[in-house]
Length: 342
Image 1 (tube, rainbow, N blue to C red):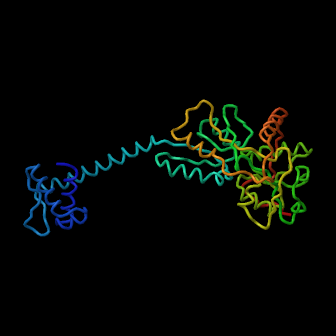
Image 2 (cartoon, rainbow, N blue to C red):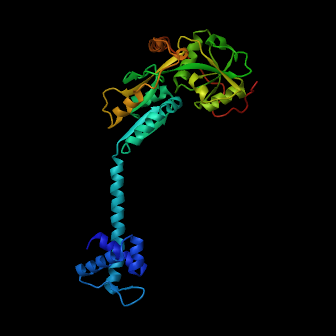
Image 3 (cartoon, helix red, strand yellow):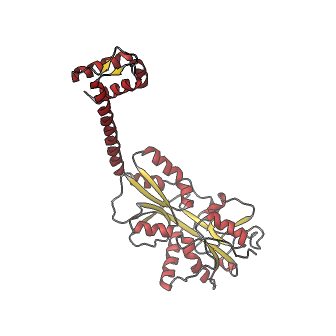
């Protein structure tokens, strides 16, 4: 007796006829009849009373039917548990990205996932500052992050081509006095209310330090890591916000203006970060190679300075050595209620 024969017999017993069972099993009736005869011969027992319509079970057939269903259920359970154990050791790559980088690099990631169905790719979104911390703690396998490098045990390889850097911009209301400017400096923002990313993001981390260089501390009225919320707060609070200029193509609204930021640290280079001396999961080197392949080049007006990486690194070292200024947001970042928008 084998499992196929047992499955055939149970189907016949439930259907009450050979023809109905054959249709349900997608086999021919002669094939099914031969299989049942072989089963009866191997057990030396008649299992079906063929003199009745529909077919009925003999005492031996009743016993095999009841116990056989239990056996097949156990076999299926065994198979499911075995598959689950197999999936539990399936290769998994955990990659961290910001929202902007998810948009920019999703085509490469999607192609990698399609060509490697046996590898589970988990995408974790946060700010580059926080992602570097997660990488250093071993909670991620790799990440597409902004410079500077905050964690000494990370190795960050700079990218080249179109998505190798992004530019800082100031988002203001369309009716703001600065809205018509072709560029602004941090000095132009003195006295403004700020909506800001948190310290999980490089831009949130650097804001207070860059403002200090112009002799003021930013008046931060909202902290939130949702760029949609931040852009909305610019409209409702008449605040200003420093965000990647590249997001203007995603968050299009005639109610706000995106103005390039003219600053020594206006371009932030991007790289692939991994933990030093840690073995890579299977397939991760291929994924890194796909992410590192240049996708075109910058338009001349958008091209970052050749020394952008050195400038960002020096600015971070300067902030670290002097002690970066701290600030406390004036508004709870979970709500805009109670804030005068004017």
